[in-house]
Amino acid sequence: MIETFVFDTNALISAYILDESVSRKAYNKAFDSGILIYSAATFDEFAEKFVLSKFEKYIPLERRLSVIKEFQAKAVLVEVELQTASIPGTTSFLN
Image 1: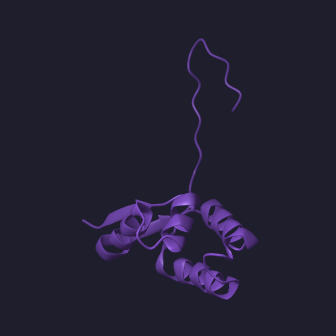
Image 2: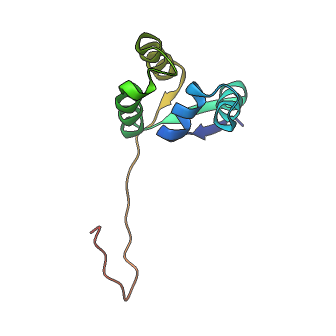
């Protein structure tokens, strides 16, 4: 069975800017031993945040843009359905 892995935006950015970080080790393992999956919302957030100028001191913009394309090509986009449930006796603000 192939394992799937999910990273949030912070973990993805940490994996790219800190080569020796736990996030980077986990990221490498995900690609070496399974499939990294992402939602459209996660990808959009990652792409939007990773191009911010505050990351220039770690990685030049051109390389960050390349990383975003590489991630999109290597990882697998999945559709996410959001389901909510009400708990009896509580007020749900999601429904």
